[in-house]
Amino acid sequence: MGCEGFFYSLLITISAALITYNILVSSTAPLKPGFPGPGTLIEPSTISGARYVDPVLEMPSDRSKSSEGDRRKRLFHTAVTASDSVYNTWQSRIMYYWFKKFQNQPGSDMGGFTRILHTGKPDKYMNEIPTFIAKPLPSGMDQGYIVLNRPWAFVQWLEKADIPEDYILMAEPDHIIVRPIPNLSKDGLGAAFPFFYIEPTKYESTLRKFFPVNKGPITSIDPIGNSPVIINKASLEKIAPTWMNVSLAMKKDPEADKAFGWVLEMYAYAVASALHGVENILRKDFMIQPPWDLEIGKSFIIHYTYGCDFDMKGKSTYGRNGEWRFDKRSFEHMPPPRNLPLPPKGVPESVVTLVKMVNEATANIPNWGT
Image (cartoon, rainbow, N blue to C red; front, top):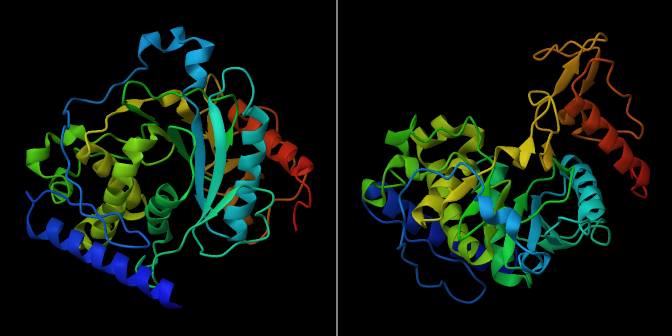
């Protein structure tokens, strides 16, 4: 590691240590997020102007009345964080294929696209996918939880990259866009998918270490992660350092680490958003998650996080390998082959569509499997 790498390691270590101390010593101490940069440690910002109301559940009705001219002023930039693993890479290539298919279709507010590669070095897909190289956390800081690199990568990207759009869509490699996405945010509110397993009220005593009582009711924390979220870029620039610091502090806290597990970073984003008073429109139609969601409907994204297992009569065998199956984890060390077999008759539309879209992408992406 050279001088620059040593500086980044020292800088983030000092920032994380200070913020962790402030959080842990007092449940009422305000969080003071720093924004690590290449020159100096920027003066910690303060959190003000928060509004504490229950989450907005529906899209404001006047959204559909916007003219084409108004809509085009609200382009968002799609950002996907990823490692250079085979697993992340084949998903990113498929995601970007479908992004390009829908980017310029009617109804789309999809602007540019960036894969934020948090490995600190380029890979061989730089010419295929627009990519920003972010530094990973210093060795050992993620404590084996690689997802902690995500908020740190966003901090670097927001600080250094030239992002022409005023809004950001935070997405993930295992997202497949199924229709043009409009800008779902509105009037300073973000737009986010509500996750049933993000339960702030259930973990109130733990979350109060990071979201003090004087910041408002625990219901101010929306049941969201950082993805998918469409948010004003200026708001995300404020949230990202706090998201990073809260993630690090939660990981260092045994109670929070045990309670939140692999969704810890999602809770950290929800807390950071609430600390900055950024509320979210909760859009259940933002995405579906096969095999539990059966139909595409009017959703915008397929998130294939769960395994899809069925017998040859089309009956789900979830929890054990089916006679027919599609599970992204089957392809951790090699990408899925072209022309995957389609599910048997009776399998939900969402699963059939997922496999067909994977097959179309792999058939058309050059040098697939290399």
